[in-house]
Length: 270
Image 1: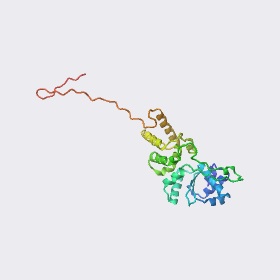
Image 2: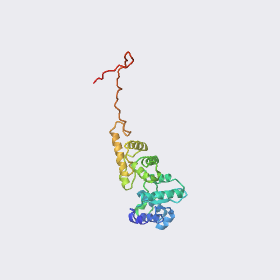
Image 3: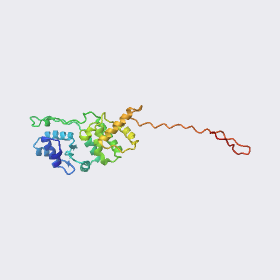
Image 4: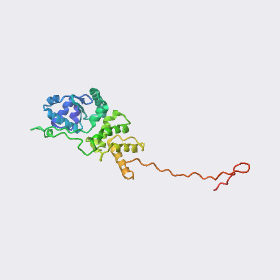
């Protein structure tokens, strides 16, 4: 909870909600208090709580896992390390009996639009705003996320799904719709499609360099890939194999023999 007090960018009653969630969380940030519990703790209505959860989620300080028939599960990400987030996802997967891959894919997918009627006479004007739709921003198709994240794990992390949470963040960078810190600064436009990313990875693999697993480095290498493609007659493809110089076979005279069967020796031409 002290992380939220010290590092959160939320204000007013939205900050109060995030503190209430963090107060229920374990050391890795995982919590699952009910909406009714949060409403009682913060002295607010359940509708207001739902709006504020959307705002915290949009800010990147809260991840929300939703399932019918279950309380929401939350991961508070304020000042958390990647390892703590991975631990929280692993514990969540065990709790709801889902795979880590499915949980990660859902948590890092673009947010769907959640609309709630605005409350009247609210003291905080921000509470009357609808949750922002992450998919309505410059970027690729929403259904590109899962196949693109899979390629990021397969190529950049060599198939190691323990890095899926970081891969999800890089996937949003590739789609140009990250909104958190360095990731937002490294958003790629126009967005990268799964097909283009696979060509990028083959192109990059030919260079035999360490895979770009930071947002800024990934941004720079995609830029280089596209620039090289634009200067080529075959854009966005692997560079053509260099043509080998044709070396004709040596021309040798037809062998001739002496009367005794020994080969005739020819004088070399200098």
